[in-house]
Image 1 (cartoon, rainbow, N blue to C red):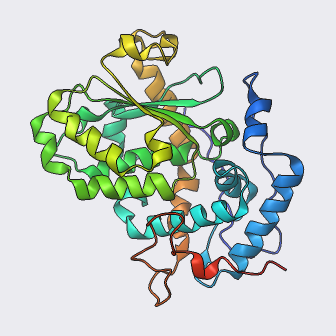
Image 2 (image 1 turned 90 degrees about the vertical axis):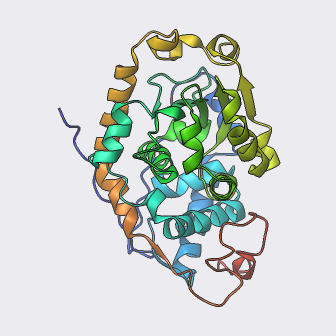
Length: 329
């Protein structure tokens, strides 16, 4: 049965009434410690939501943007309730959607290509979370058929997954662990990957992704795929790079991931098909909301230092320098 779709959020940058409804994360025993780490309490939430909303309303280049609490908390929680950092990531997130439409537009589980990649298990989240509440994703990257698909399809699938769970409070607070199984990567995959593409992906991960990335694990790496892993690591910032690890096989990976959480095919409890089914249901439930994201707008074609060409550079760079002094009175 198709899950009931959720309501469509408002995209007015300064609506008469803001949607303040949001959830507190539930589940793991460590959740209070997690909230302490990200510096979340009711006062911080209320103050930072108000600041972000004024900032969006006054932003000279943002035209349409969600302002509901569920959406804005993605950025605040990912940046430990630092208003400045959260606003930078939000700005770059909106820019990334414009700069890379083939990655972020039409994130529709009913799209034939995305549906096919989902069905074959290219990337999907595991049904159960880790002990501390992290969502664990598994990507069998070699399943991307280089005769049919490009790196853009890979990025769209990862964007689909991220957006499908983006409003989940536990996902926002506890973060995600990504597992990349490289065993099926072949020489033909080299034709759709370049250092330029790897740099673009790393720019987004470094500077524009409103997610708490807790770890990235690569497993079963054939010698011919080492340059892909090393190339991407070279473009990640130090913080992300320090959270990356390489494992020979799933036995070695089991030292860091509870094997029971994995699909049955990798030593876990439930078959891969069940994890994929749950992912499909989540995508269907959030389908209308994800498609509405395509209507958000930010103008990047102007002459200020903040522009299309520098928008995804170093997060501490000048891309938002001209706007940092915005007065929130």
